[in-house]
Length: 169
Image (cartoon, rainbow, N blue to C red; front, side, top):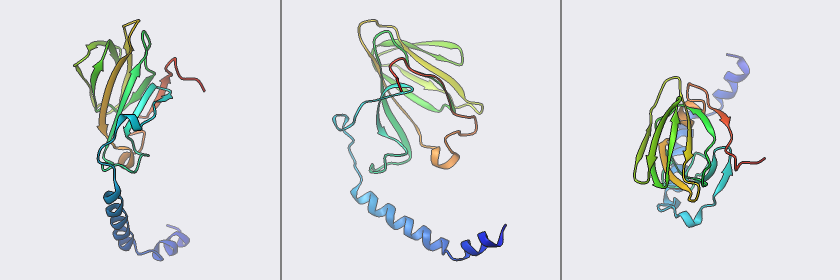
């Protein structure tokens, strides 16, 4: 360790910093949003498609920071982007019919189904498809917010492998 870093660290009361963080978190909790309403959320077009974020690591005004929760809509006959990530996600199909390709294996689903994306050390490759040419498919998904603990790569690498057709830069 360099002496400069050691001297800089010695100037900070790190335990005091924890107490200050605790106090900030307590104040944030007093003002935190308990009910997140869909009408208050914009729909975002991103590399994965059409998404509405309820809980996200960069949304800091909600009561929970420990979960990620989003809604995704797949337009008629379309698909999401293809992504490699750690897994450990649960999806509930709210509307429509389609399938998920998980590590090359096709898994059909319909409204009311729950899709479990397994947690794997080397990650999973996932893409979702809407088979209905007339109506959108919609699902909600939840997973633990590991980003702060183990970084976005989460040990396996996080790569956008293919963009949704609706995404344009």
